[in-house]
Length: 418
Image 1 (cartoon, rainbow, N blue to C red):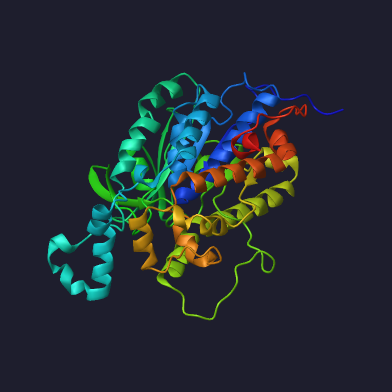
Image 2: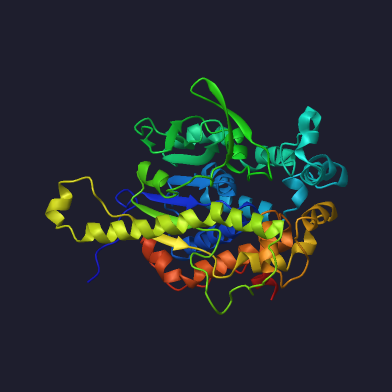
């Protein structure tokens, strides 16, 4: 006879980790939609917020913060986030008109071709490839951070954490807002800072290196400049554990293990383009650390399981229940089908780096996969996230302790139009 289901008060504290990846973070929204639908189908809709501990990095930090700000109305918060991602256009994230692209990206490419000696004039020193000023305006509407303190006081949320990388100190910093009992932590080259989360923290966390400008944040009475939180992030899962999570849902932005044969990109003998090199570097920043950390967590859990229960009860060691949902398809390949959807000025600029509208050029499309904030692409990723989650329906329900009755779920996106 199976053990009785835990009540909400005795259930393990659940953490959510949303990783980085620019436009790839649309995949996370499809995952959240599927979880919201499963929650209702299993009759758990009246339970408290399923994720009292929420952590995020880069674009995942924006989704994490938006979800945290609706912790008292989980389903409504998911719908609000889905509306934004399902109707995205690049102009909502960065300036994509010809003049703006010329002022930032084209000027940078000119410096690359003519030599940095031209940069002795300060006005010739562009800070980034693209200007993300529109994102700051979007965050004001999408992420009502003013609600966080009250949600934490009322118990709807235990903690929100977003990560960023300091160009000034070299540290990887986790900024968190939580109840009084949680203290900051320090590890090698990474540390936590208790702070009121602001939109500047989100802009910093999502500042893809070279692509978007760094953001200034005051830390310990000094101003530091921060970039994307995926940089130098050696332990993505750690923040949720430090904040008290006993089980963690991890949503990735790329395949955890790339196939070596079928489905792998076709290798070419030609010299790699700048787009290929940039895409490879971004994949290293956004994807590699997570897979390594998941494997490390699984090994630790296995080691802990070998310790006798009585010995374990007298120590601080505890296993962490981990559920990972990651794309079943290469998002580079999905992006290759949508490169033509980019605004013409951006497409022209990326074309100078080697990004083409050739749907077979998967490696060249890797860079575009982070910048394709266009609804045709984001909707494809949302649909994939939903499908991948429902493919693990039994595992998801088991993770949350929900009783799956097998009830059908509402149709969304392309499912509803089929």
